[in-house]
Image 1 (cartoon, rainbow, N blue to C red):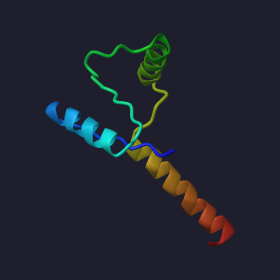
Image 2 (cartoon, rainbow, N blue to C red):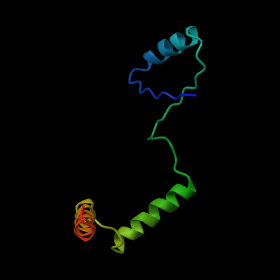
Image 3 (spheres, rainbow, N blue to C red):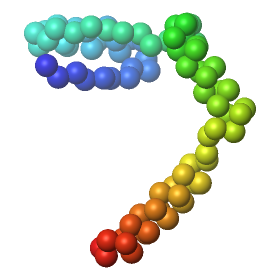
Length: 83
């Protein structure tokens, strides 16, 4: 099975797409991802709060810092193993 995700901006295009897919004999499911009205699960909220606590307690690094550390480590390994 292959999944195709299509983002449709115009509501009237949904009915046209449904008609085309039906005529072509495809099975399909339409999902409306309205982010403003969706609620987060308790598990998602726990994860978000844990991440925010990590930030407040200094247990995170910026992208630039992490990238720099990785590049430094790769350079050290190249020197050590001669690649």
